[in-house]
Length: 225
Length: 106
Image (tube, rainbow over the protein chains, first blue to last red):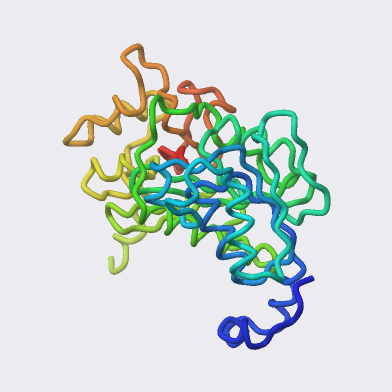
């Protein structure tokens, strides 16, 4: 549990109050992937005062990451993302416990125990489906995806919602590098972080419905699943 | 008779919801209603959908052989058609067909 700190959290306490802050302050989340979406999602959660963040990624920081991955800079090139992310998040909020897991989702690694939910910040469908299968029953699964200047966010409850693999049946990874803009990544990551906090507070807004964001047309739409 | 127009039966139709790049191709159009008739399937509805549009879009959904592309999911009343009967899924009056190309990256 993150200690109550009225000064640090004064702005958000004015908005959501102490009860919600207490729920957030005892939350434990797994962030699968600390690339474009995961770097910003984990940063927002650390700033908001989540108790524990498990970061899972086996990648290193590359030059092409810096246009959208908000926890990294030129000085980090070649370093393991989870280790850099852990350092930065601890600098942002030292009261948050950050656990780095250097493995790839879908491999032999297992999910840590004691998590309230999972944030799917991965960049491929096979990894997403493997992650969903590994999530314990009853825990929430927050999916995010981004491509070009559009993206989507969706909350599922393992065991109660339709499985992600059923909803996204037929989706295979596009060939080559996925085009993505900095703005779309930050927008989708911000929405994901907001929905993760809503889940911790017990008030998910996107349970069993996609929020589809299109920055080409500046539209937000819902899609029930 | 006053008010009689509002009681006319609505012609049978399927509501097609469009998302992402498809919407952009259609000039921001979000929904299209296409006429329904007994025996319509997802496949025949997509043909009607294409016929009602000024620009080609079905090549974004189907390959040259008429099989589904892997970049767009098609839902009928919230269910992926690959968990129903695919393009042969039978439609009913009032069904909602959603065409959604999800973002793949992270």
